[in-house]
Image 1 (cartoon, helix red, strand yellow):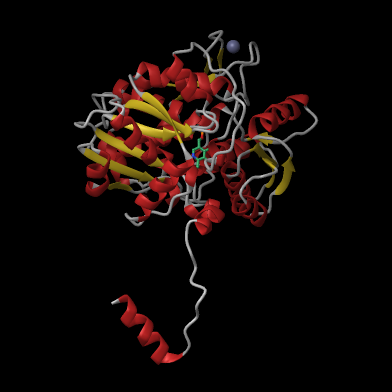
Image 2 (image 1 turned 90 degrees about the vertical axis):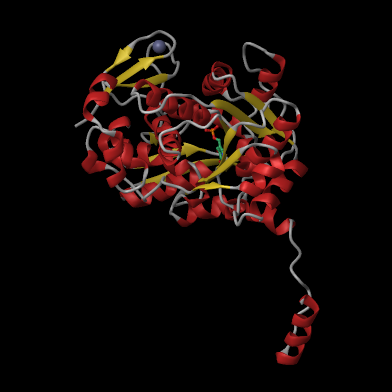
Length: 412
Ligand SMILES: Cc1ncc(COP(=O)(O)O)c(C=O)c1O
Ligand SMILES: [Zn+2]
């Protein structure tokens, strides 16, 4: 039984039925927002009964835009660990700190939460090929879900995408097309290609309104794990801004259903070298101006022009009384080391939230009494060269037991 009732355009308010294959609003080319029958959901779905289902994205299927549950394409995504860290809470200067590690997703990043939904829709609509443009993680996720569904995949990435992400996509069978330029330039050309009608691929990129919905599951999982409570604040890395905007939608839905009382302050984090949304928040600008992309090790977040979703993310930050921060490469590396100190192996783009928390507490934007969730969005294996740069592999090789013992004595 579905509660998904269709889409409303956020700009012209046109509505569309749930079975339409849509990207942007056909009338005005703005974003579409999925609607649900919340009154019926509140009456018929018991939040506590959902516990008995497998702990994954599809635990929340009544709040996702699928029409045929038999077509769900899943790799068991979602249900990722929410770990409390007393040590890092003290170090950052907040009362309560939780780390939500999406490195534990099947392909190692947050993208699996949303690509499971778009792959499912591709099967529902009868497509043979999944496509996306990507800074790397979306590409490898799209490729994995295409394989799982028995479909083909084509992915477009900036020429300097981290090798492990490209290799992962290719290993899953994707046709990878490397394009010279930075992500926003490629995004503009990719959208033109999809819009041209030259290809009949299912677009799992930024314009897919079904895909967005998968990101709401952050809100549901975190609220449930905290005993149906919203944290005071969520810090989320942002590239296009979809994840942050939809996590905010997820919390508002929970409030509307009466499943949680409060809402978190949504706090957006980017690499300082490419931080158009942070700049808009800091300057109070009504709209996001594109920036000149400068180097940042947070390569997955380097969207110089975040487009329509970016505006929604900024709205969420402002509406929730949140904040935004751009963090430098040394701050990101320090956060990656701090996370390693908790046993967490996180790529630079995924670790920016912890880096930002320190900065925002020091600047007085985060109160010491807050309970905070930092979302960690990708595994260290995803940008493995950055990890290798940060360690020294011993040049010396010991031979035989006596030499091993001598080396061991030096450690002790
Ligand atoms: C590791 C990581 N974190 C966060 C994001 C942010 O995604 P969004 O475009 O939803 O802001 C991305 C997007 O590529 C990513 O790869
Ligand atoms: Zn419209």
